[in-house]
Length: 510
Image (tube, rainbow, N blue to C red; front, side, top):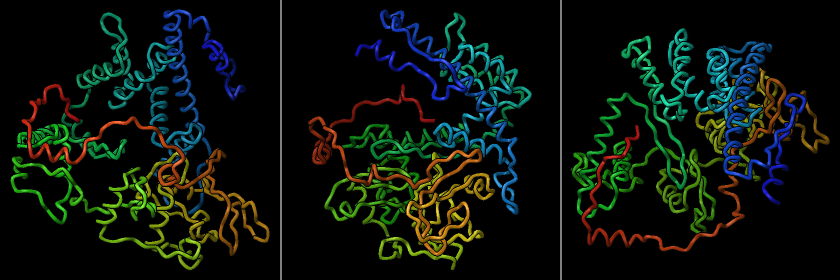
């Protein structure tokens, strides 16, 4: 099949022709010349911009229609979500419709609302293809950081900087620098007041990365961040000069940062000169990790019969050796009483709140909020009765599920529903109401999340099969020599002078 035929087969026609009509197909003649391909790329860039402008209109209209829905909910409920029930419901609906996370849906809705209602000039430029969605996001992001009465005028002024003096369209990154500087110059409030407000947003965030690594990000006042970075750098440079040190400066900065942030632990084997930045910095961290961590280890891995991977809760894949080392260092092992089938013992109607061990099982079983697309980790979620306690629900594993505070509130207000569908085999079992409560029996059937507008999606626990399940594919690995620990020992016994390294050209992480 040639390229033209393939593109013809991939012509676009909406699955919803009642609201989006027509067919989009690339003219195969565009493939004949480099200029034709370039023109086609420009055409699709225009289409992407138009599509983004229409999504913004629809998202904003969607939120307005949700706000017009009756949102009184269940009687007797306290004020939840700071009264922003309509916005919370609109975000959840949008996440379900577009198959995105709640965070992505919230950012999309906030951007759409500001773009359509506060910045019509930017929205028009996007719809016409003069700018891309990335440009529009930069402009709106900077404009919305100003007081509301100044935001629209600033957006128009910033839009005029979209091109250079010679007419070249700035990249979104270039535009962000220009517009950020313009914002600082034109902001009607003093830098002192703005700094005081900005300090309230300081925090630390963790993002999992590949191959057993994570990125730890801190938002700090500029002078504190620069001072901390310089202090870490000076300690790393001092260690780099030590005889036999083979780590690079970036590696040493990372090790210094980790040792400064971690508690001393039990062995506290850090040499005294280390504190002054003149000694060698230890490379390992195992004896410094004292916080409780949860590792899901297959039995074969724990016993050493397999070197397959394990799962570090809240992160992802870790290697078998690390998993066994963490398990061996754990001060206690948590146990949970189960019945003969391995299911945690239920409490029925004898108690409303599950005991700590029972709650711990639900946290480990579900892993995150069970609402589709929600990634709220178990540690920040709440154990909820699927069938409400006041409606006859039991405190049993099949009637308990994790919900984040937002989705718990939407369910408690009876705006969204978490329910179980009728079991496939229900002969001889008595059900009660829409919730399909099985009286005197274990609740069965699939768990379903139903939104305010009636959209349904399966609700389920965190899927760990891709980590802890059977290995179905082994990818080939190119044969190559891997450095052995003995090579490092040889380097320490016969050290080479460290190569000259400079901080020049290395951007700080802040």
